[in-house]
Length: 365
Image 1: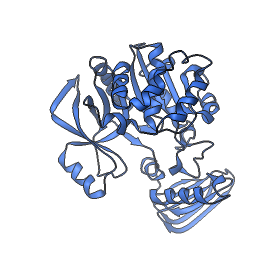
Image 2: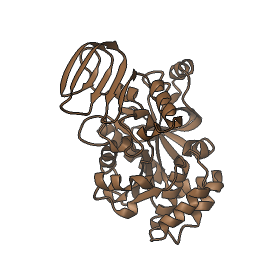
Image 3: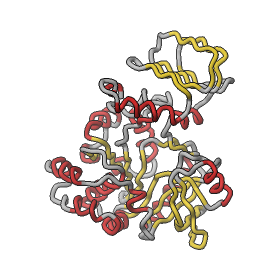
Image 4: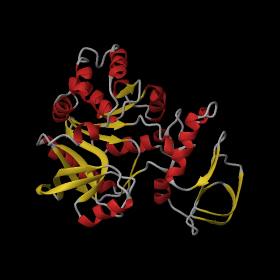
């Protein structure tokens, strides 16, 4: 493996749309939601350890999740766990990792990826990421990964390619980015699919460290001037105090809006490996095996009849689950919360919002 290749895993979100299984104390990236014996974070780490040296993987997460990272990735060096004191979206997350790593290896080429993706085609994924690393090493472009859309999905962002500017890296095609579009409505998503110019925005990035540092400084000086003063603190005992001061003054802004939508160097690597952004219960429902009635049922002792298109999760192994006579519902039984609602993304979002604003009930978040 190339020892100038690194990966930055963003693992600081709270995963509110996976409530009540995902909580602020243990959000979705630290949970085995798929029931396969590994958490999202562990799967993501193992995935990128096939592409870059394991010691070159950095985790950016919230201060309160440090112990969870150490518990699930015990071999991770402390200096590779970057702790954010406050939520400030993805641009400060990327800036922190960029400036810290730049002190150690300014020649690095980096993958930046969320911790909650499901990748089904491992071999094709690995080949795509290695080709993208090679392309990024040889240019100052900022690459993202675009996924061939299979349906007019409204839960993903889209990237429009500029077909006039393209390049091949082996068998892989890359294009200059024409536009980024956030989650469209159903009608617009259908138009996107029909044009053949729009691809799902995976939220994965590949670039030389110098390239992203230059564009961060050009597009987001209000962020980078804060991190730029940390050369004497990164990799020292003074780093945590410095970062806390920085984050107190740092604006909250996404790397997509802050840099990728402004830069002239955005390119997209196209691929069709099996990819899903597991951001909601609905996205998990679409991916996991279902019974003959299109149900996802996790319960050791069960009596399930006349139930269709529903999710039933019981976390108490010995508890009898009796379900009958409903469809397209979510039933999640946790030790302190029982959720029964319609099986759609908006319902969970509304419930979490209601809990947030109600006194004494927000302790269940």
